[in-house]
Image (cartoon, rainbow, N blue to C red):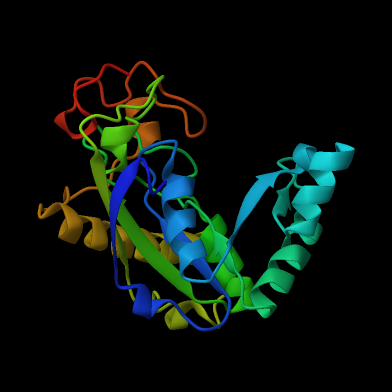
Length: 237
């Protein structure tokens, strides 16, 4: 990462001393490396949510469990195990990295889109602080849905850490859909505000909603992925 990107990390003093949930924006496939690099260098190795199937092979599974990555069973059967591991990581002062958007943003100009409720649910169940994080610049090195790196000229990424999101208003409310959606929107608003600061631009008044544009909520949306956008180098998706 040091060889590929110049970097500037801002607001790292806002990282809590205890365990926390890191929620960044998601605009390129190398986001986990960008944010993970920052957290690791701050002495807070990140723990990622990973498909439960990755924990089954003997060697890979042992590594995943040994480093306390968090298994996610999309069938819902392993939800209790995921929560147990997450609590253990947080109790030990670890950082859990969750992308509330769930996949690369569908927004044509790479602004954060409508979020999923997983991060809010985990925060409200565990009481862990949610730290919003925005980054900008890595998409020039590896544009959304690109097939190769664009290393020349050397790119520069900036990462901005925000204050923990105040979710105290939801503390005693039932974890129903309305509570989780409202808490998620508050997290997404904090991430968007940080990104607007980094970009020196005003964010759209309305958050991009994939379902309103007939786009899938998960996986690649290659055909529509910021095609020709100046923010990802104008490289076709």
